[in-house]
Length: 372
Ligand code: IPM
Ligand code: MG
Image (cartoon, rainbow, N blue to C red; front, side, top):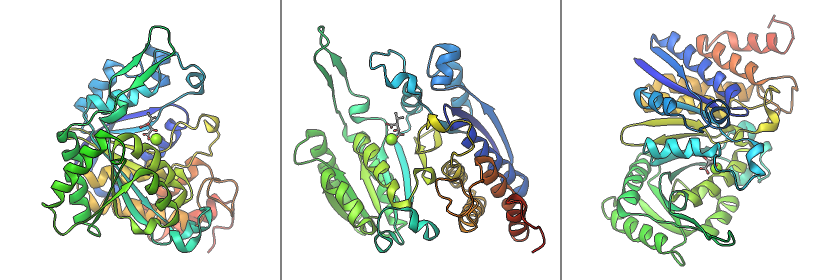
């Protein structure tokens, strides 16, 4: 298959982790005779610095003409202390989501057996957790009207949803539930918010079209608690934009590190794949950023283009790296010198030679004997 991939590494640790995802995709291309081409673009603080805009026109054009987009992270502490900043790195990401109409954000949360001791939650509660968020990504309070009073002492954000916006993400969520454990939970605040009442009404109507799916409804405050005390009850969680941002980040404690969480953002025409974690500025260029979320985002990209065998091999490589403790310090309790790029090298090596070299490779990279 030929794929032209727009690569937007962005800020902070974005470039380092995306480099490992590109390495992975190149290894897959070689192994399976695909032609993947990569074209780089600026976004976020890096783009503001060079062009004055967080989403330069050129970047948007690049994303539109490419087959898909691989995105790193955006953000910079410089802006976090300036609430009056007119231009912010986040505008790059939000602008892309809107311009490419990426309405459905898929965030899988899978607990790895090998990492169960990394989560602050009890092992028996998190074992076998496999849930997936379907977060609406182009509506709600993020994109509603914003106002400031003239004296600067009053501000408002509006949360608006239309039936159509709800239906398109909900259809994808119902279909996903059908291919999984047939369970869908709508998370909302329908006891208070008008927009949530619309969500509940539309989803209740739609449930009739999917009789095999068991649909549950949870208020977001209750969901926040249930996710921690009994995450195994969930299969698909359908959720609006803002609640989804908060609750999906909370879910990262189940897997032990946000550095493991990948995502896909899909529209009718375009697609984008990105790790959930942010720019983690403090860690930039230290070689400690976990590239697994970016690599698993690349696996989701492969799946999106029906390259299932390729995606499965990528996932096997990730599993193996976790099993052998070829991981960055956020996860590693055994070795302290495994860098971002070493994890990427291991994944690349495993993909090119899944059966034989990996144990040997472990030893080489740990500076140990190569005779095994
Ligand atoms: C996310 C991020 C973004 C969001 C930020 C960076 C704008 O937190 O993708 O979850 O709020 O959606
Ligand atoms: Mg977030």
